Length: 426
Image: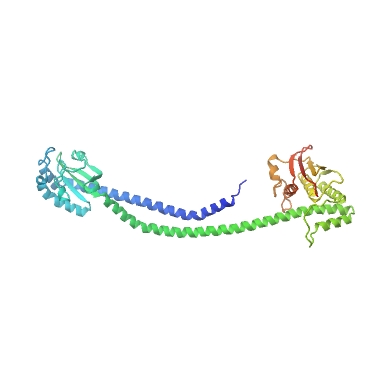
């Protein structure tokens, strides 16, 4: 059976459901923005890498670049590097070309070196005639390079391509874009994306707020309906309990009237009908005629249900309406459950009444013993449509109010046995 949530848990769940749409919007927009920024940065970086490599490879293939690099390849040696003066003729030819390429392609620098890695061209005049600081052995050996390195101008994404004159490597072309420039382009792209993200966030927040308001309204309507249903259920239960008790009273009256005990019947009615004068609620002992009439009426009722009732109750025992209600409900339930023989016993030990109802019916499944005393539980079909499962709930409550308890077991007849004890009425 499904358990209902506690009020505290239900409130937490409700708040979570109200806030959930906004959290989903914030999370979705935030993740989308982060992913878009990451994709944008990757695209910018990839485009920059393709651009610097294409520029470097294109320059390395130019005849003028090959010829100029080859013309100064003999100017220096690994042990005696060429200087700016030695490389001046090549610088005069290649520096204007390098400056033009820088302006037209948007790269930060274009550097051409000789076969020892000494700069022929460089945007900074002071760097010309100096050997590059980064590793270039593999490039001067004929293998292109593409990656990020740190040089005099800072960290940059650069491409290095060897310049070949036939089979010989006579120099290299290095083209780079500063990492700070790449990050700046990323920030610009992110700045263009943010208005759209903020717009999506505002629109999503408004939509989620409307949804949250609709959910909250539904919760409030559900709360109002639940409260109304709970009140209705309490009212119905109270009416059913009153109807059950009233039925027991009618059987007592029937027994009294059938025996001609008119005076006792009128007194019983007078005690049962509310008056304008408040009375202290207390159990009062019933006279022998009322008790006898009650059991005779109960025996007749049980008989109509197809069962024979045996009553073993000593005369003079202190019996009140509560005791009668307990015995009547237990006997009636036994007969309605299909028993053909029902025995009712009641005795007194000191200040305690001991009672039991045994039957030869199908008994009560051990798994249903605890549920049997819950209001609304019944193993019998409700033919009237007004609800069942009231008697045993009343019985347990009445016995508990009298400081007693009731136990369920197997009777000597093979059916169920309901044994109880409770304080003697005052």
